[in-house]
Amino acid sequence: MRSALPREPPLCASCREALLPAEETPVGVRAAFLHGGPIAAAIHRAKYGGDPSVARGLGALLRDLIPEGDVVIAPIPLHRNRLCSRGFNQSAVLAAGAGRSRVGVDLLARLRDTPSQTSLDRDHRRANLDGAFTVERPARVRGRLVVVVDDVVTTGATMRAAMDALREAGAAETLGVALASAALRHARPRGRASSVSGW
Image 1 (cartoon, rainbow, N blue to C red):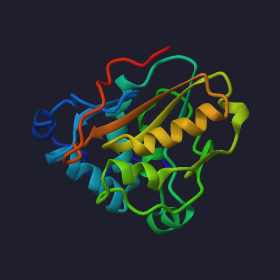
Image 2 (cartoon, rainbow, N blue to C red):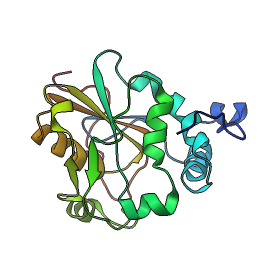
Image 3 (cartoon, rainbow, N blue to C red):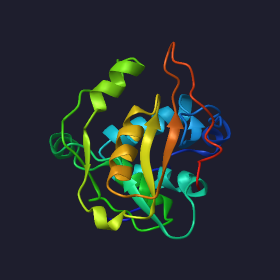
Image 4 (cartoon, rainbow, N blue to C red):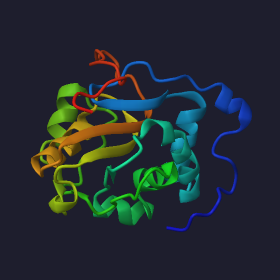
C-alpha cells in the first residue's frame, strides 16, 4: 500500500474542532471519537471514496490509543468478496496510519461473508459474528498483547469475535481500538474504554 498523502485532508481544522470524544464503549475497547458529523463523513469517504490515503490520514488520530512497545496490531479483516469489491481494507490502512507498530494484515481472516451489522440489534450482531474469524498465524500472537483495529465500534460484537479468536490462538491480552464509537438505539453501554484488565 502506498503511503501517499490524501488528495485532500481527511478533516479540515474546523471539523476537527467539532469532534466529540467517545465516552462509552464496550468493555475492552477504546475509541477516539463519538460517531457522527465530520468523523462519520470522513469514515464514509475512507470506505467508499476509492482513496485509501484518506483512511491513512485518519489513522493518525488513533496513535494515542495504541500502546507503545512490543504489541501486535491486527486489523479487522474483510471477507475476500468485499475486499475485491472495495479494493482495500480500510481498517488495515487506518492501523498503518497510526504508525505505532508493524501491522499484521494477515493475522486474522474472516471465514464468512457476514451481512452488514448496521440494521441488527445487539443479540443478532453477536450471532452474526459467531465463528466468523480465525487466526492464520498463531505463533505471531502467542503470549503477546494484540491490538485489534477497526473504524467504528457499536456493541463491540465484531471486536469481541476477533479478540476471542486471538485469545483462543494464545494471545496473552487483547485490546480493541476504533476511530469512532456509535450508539446502538436501545442498547445499553457496557463500560468505559479507560481500562483493560491485565494491561
